[in-house]
Image 1: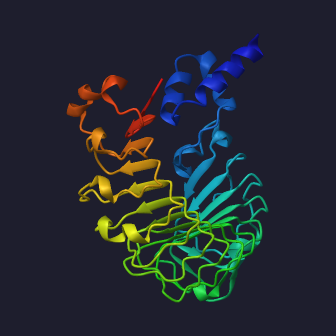
Image 2: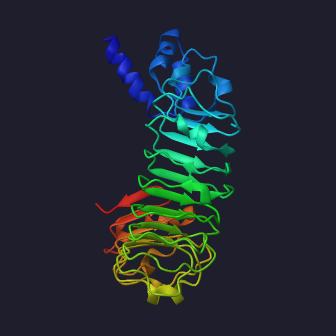
Image 3: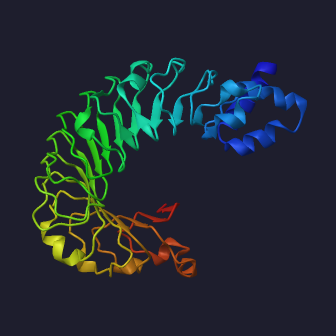
Length: 326
């Protein structure tokens, strides 16, 4: 019976935020003992938790200098002031590592082979940085310099480059995201299927033909005809409609200053996301699913029943609330 109670409490706590977990487990001494079985997954400074009896249950840790003691079950580590030559006590459970200030090859030499996500936010040393072969998701911050010395392994499938750095990309990358100052000399691999250049402020050439999901803010030439999901962050949607391929079924318009017109929406679109509410009766008949990112609650009373909604609409989402036709 005791085991069943423990399992129920653990399962229940999995649905709560860390703060709510602590409140719930602090109501009695009996509840308090279950802290040894609960994981706390929100980021915490190691200084605030190192003295706790359930220290090993924290999975997401922030520190400036590596501590002699680290949580046994830690999966995420953010180092924001580390400047020593090596790390020798990271648990083998680690999967996500972020260097917030400085990184060099010696720092990476003792990283466990369980690491899959690596982020370099500020700077790297002058020597060549060889990213571990186990990394599949790699993030390069806007302030990270000397990326010519960074070797991206072929294991990386998701890459985010947030600055204007040049870095050689290899075939095998599937998801690629750029910040607002993409280096024009970067060649996008043909293996990319998910491409995000929605914050780039200039024209991007040679979008790979295999891209299926594209986020972009400037279009002045035909897009690849395999794109299914298009997210447009720019303005002047009417002018770019002619460049959108018939393959696009999911269209998201992000700009809040966009003046919606029914004729702007390509005939192949069945899933439409708009930045704010526009009359449901002005949605084209080929659109079956509509999402409003922002909704005026004063309009909600007009859409209480499906009798007021055109038959071609199968679902409506207002921010996070979904209405599905019965």
